[in-house]
Image 1 (cartoon, rainbow, N blue to C red):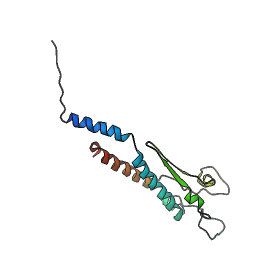
Image 2 (cartoon, rainbow, N blue to C red):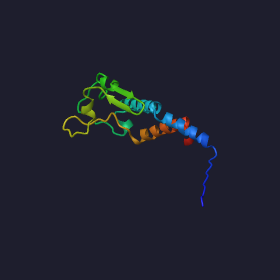
Image 3 (cartoon, rainbow, N blue to C red):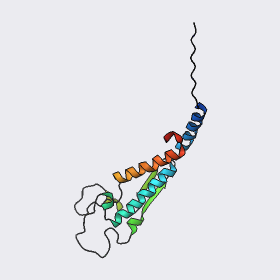
Length: 143
């Protein structure tokens, strides 16, 4: 005795088309990565004005007084942030040769750590919003 089973899903063609479209669109994250990168670069720039407070890590004060803002004698380090965005990743960096000495976690005796790049909880939430809006826009499956 043979048993047959038949399943019919209404809207299967539409769902299949949406899944195919999603598959094509989801392989290129350039748009949300670019927006998230710009958000972070703007944050890093504002962090100089707030002397680290924007990222929740206020910079140590200098021992001596100088007529220029902290870490901004020439403005080179502040202007040296770059981004490189591809379909699947974003790389943010600072090309200033002395950036690493201020940013690093290495133990130190003289030069205090002054964080200029960090993805804090506020930025994490904003980046999540950027990706959520992007997913909602490219596919009704995420609405």
